[in-house]
Length: 327
Image (cartoon, rainbow, N blue to C red):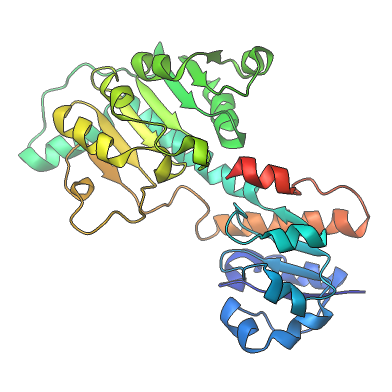
């Protein structure tokens, strides 16, 4: 029987519903550990064939791997593995699978909610009512019928947003230089330039990964070109947007709104005008899995474990090459 450990910040948050089933396949020979506890007692790693983790995963570096001599697979019940893997990890040939697909589900739901609300200019009416202490006059709004939604990057989340938007009477355009016209047609999406996405959309939703190539991708000229009363939503990574440019444009264009679930740095620095601008809606990175939504990630890892035990390909395994692209 395989031997394994749980090592993460909050064992119950992710594995509460599935840890008993996992124990049917794996001899979990110690209590759930944290990054801090395993640093104090690294000899616990010696017997581990597999590791179940999530937020708070230790860095999988030379020092960690020197103790985890038998480690063959890591089941990461969270999203991006960017900040936990190292060259030493890849050199060992250890398999790693992630619950990024499970974490994508609430991001898509959050994005859909913000798109629909923004098409009604919902945040404008919320903020205007609070500031004036009276209902404002109703103004022209895009609404869902015949509006244009712009999607930046058609990765897993971007594609799922496009799929769910098919049920609404909207036109979806997208920018992604790596997606073919055939793929876009299947999604019901019109591919166009990044400039056209910003010029022609009533709502723009960002889903680009944080890579060197995407840092500051969304700049002042793009934001300034947005339609009157348009909304920009960012649930991807704050670094894909030039925050200085964003602030400058929002100060000059009170008609456009920015819904920011991510910033760079995160949270914004003390005194940032992002906290006070009337046309900025800040949320503290809540689009991803929270509370019970996290149980889904544990369930995904249980299913991956079953595949692993049957010596079948893991559905959500991440290779070194994929980890670079995913950001």
